[in-house]
Length: 155
Image (cartoon, rainbow, N blue to C red; front, top):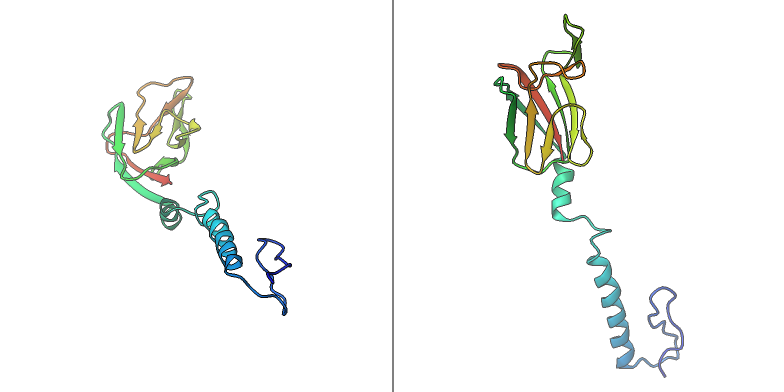
């Protein structure tokens, strides 16, 4: 006689000593296991993809660049990044000039939340700017000629 008892979670045959297994019982159990494990293994919302593993292994990149003084500079990136922190080396995050304008040497930018300065981050490029006049009392300083900059880029 086939089993009359089944496991709680998957409903597989739970054989008793007096049971006489039939082939259909094993086929049914194998189909249940295949379906449940197949759904689990293929569920990308609970498993990490190869791309995500790469992000975990290399979550950020440190990129340095030399300013050329242009109003806008596009930096082509080799990977896709979600946000960045950009700052000028050897300078405080902000300083005040003789006209009481704030000179910003530090910015945070994200693809989905914008920027704290006039900087943009797209799929594979970072665009920095160099202001020559203040806007609302702020001068963004991210491409000063011969200025040394660091961009911390996060995946």
